[in-house]
Length: 128
Image 1 (cartoon, one colour):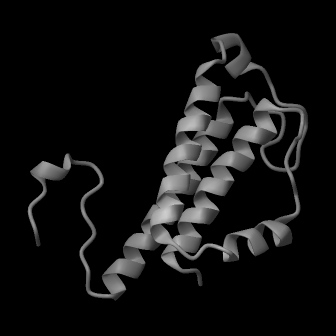
Image 2 (cartoon, one colour):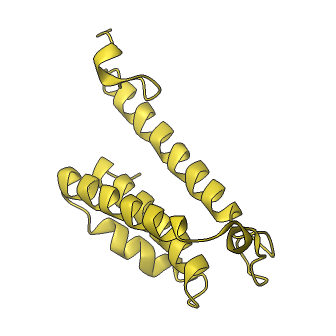
Image 3 (cartoon, helix red, strand yellow):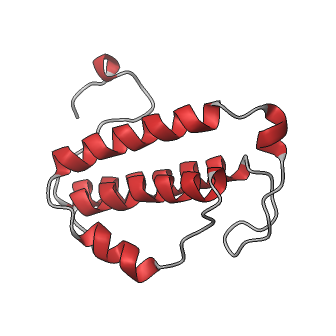
């Protein structure tokens, strides 16, 4: 089990992991134990939220530079996604992020809190 700050840190670091693996020659770093040690260092939810925004902004900027041809180019064989088009990594990031958003929702509900609906504008939400 992780703190909310650790979940945020793990999530943004995974977006970075995918982006760096696909858009650089680094490939996928398979040191999951080292990554978990880095995740455990998170202590400030506000800091990790800011880090998440910064990483999403960076990744969107980098992915946005690719042409359609580059997005559809197959990845070299790899142990995570296989030889799929690069574009598939974006879906993997979205799925992973949604998974952890769901986990945070469960944590909040277990504490008796009702998280805001993520699919509507904040001003349209009504308190429960």
